[in-house]
Image (cartoon, rainbow, N blue to C red; front, side):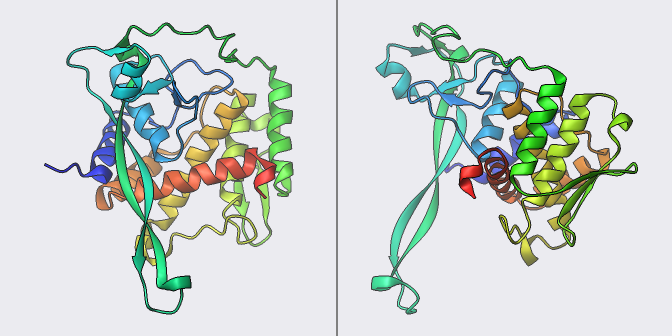
Length: 289
């Protein structure tokens, strides 16, 4: 039976949320690169693949951030242990089709088609000698709280969004294009402050002059919940980039809203993760804008 890619990954994320676990939080000991990595190519997985691999790691208690396909493991002398189950990942491949609408050169247009692949965590594989953290340049990040906060503020400054510290509410104002944050002494700790700043910065990337993020009529009343999910995931990715422990604290009603959206539309989390990763890259990589 053909795998329903959208449904399988969405179900795994729903399962974690219903268990009280946010599956976009790095499940292993974070280092200078907290994202899932292909062990052979050393390339980071992106978008929905981050969540899919995190979910699998959480469910199975994997401790390694490294993954390989069955053939990649075999090629470098590894052996996937008997009865180990793979984890689903996705990629898009363009196909060219004829289009006579006059909108495309040579009457051809490219359509992205969703494809899948299967990978195994290194915890499932024998016969591969792991390099040390030093050899992989994966030494844990170690910054003091003031330095972490200064780095977070610098990231937000680079995207051109003013930040005002006043009152007791955190929000991004699209009309004024500015972030309002509670006064710093209202936060329990610096990590909560940074997480909240990252969340609101995530919202700010949706402005028309930045990523122009709109979910449109397709998601209707669920558009607000999806935007909150984008900001939540992008905040966690920013935290990982900075080496910050902890996540933005969302009200339980948000989680219920996210569950409702995912159960109603199996592609919703794909859209949210795509936009969240784009927001993360926009904030952490000034060269993208």
